[in-house]
Length: 251
Image (cartoon, rainbow, N blue to C red):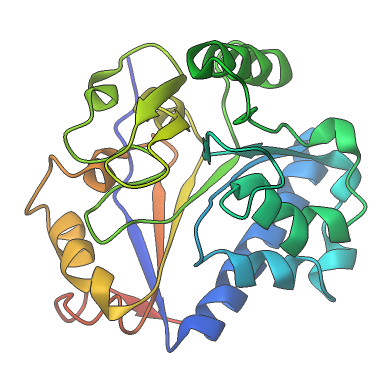
C-alpha cells in the first residue's frame, strides 16, 4: 500500500534575506540529521536566482562548519543545455555560490551534462547516475525547488508532455523560454524524495502560490509535486501576501 502524501507545511520569512537564512538553516539541519542517522545526505539543488543567497549562506559560518560535506551527495533538479561555464548554467551558479567554497569531494557532485550533443542521451545517463548513487528507488533526502510565476518547477513547464511521465526520472525537454533545450528531473523523481522544499520570493509569485496552496489549479506543475515525505513551502512575505490568514507560520 502506498503512503498518502503529507499536506504542505508553510513558513513565511519577512523578506528575501530572512528567507535565505531560513532555508540555509533547514538544509544544514537536514544534512546533519541524515548524515548522523544514515551516514550520508543527498540533496538536489535548484537553479534560478532565488536560491543563490541560500547557497552563499551555506558556504559561510556557521553552516560551513556544521554540515558534514564529506557525506553530502549533490544533484541538480534541472540544467539548461549549455556548457558548465555558461552564465545560464545552474551548475555554474551553484559552484560559484556554494560548491566551490565548501570541502565537498568532487566525486559527490553529480552534474547534469547540459553541454552534451544529445540531450536525450544525457538525460538517460543522469538517470543511471541517480540510480547508481542512491539505489533503485533513487530517493533523494531533500529536493530544493523554485517556482516560476507561471507555476513551473525545475524545467517542468505548464503543458509539457513531460508532466505525464510515469516511470523515467530524468527527461530532456523543450521549454517555452530561452534557452529552450533543458534536462530535468520528472514528477516521479520528485515524488520519491523524502522531502521537497520550495523557496519562493517576490510579489510576482503570490498569485501562483495562492493557487497552488489553495488547490485552485491542480494542473500547475508546482501543484503536482506530491512527495510522500512531504512538501515544505518557504516563502517571503511578498510571495505569501495572497494566502488566507492562518495558512502560514511566521519565522
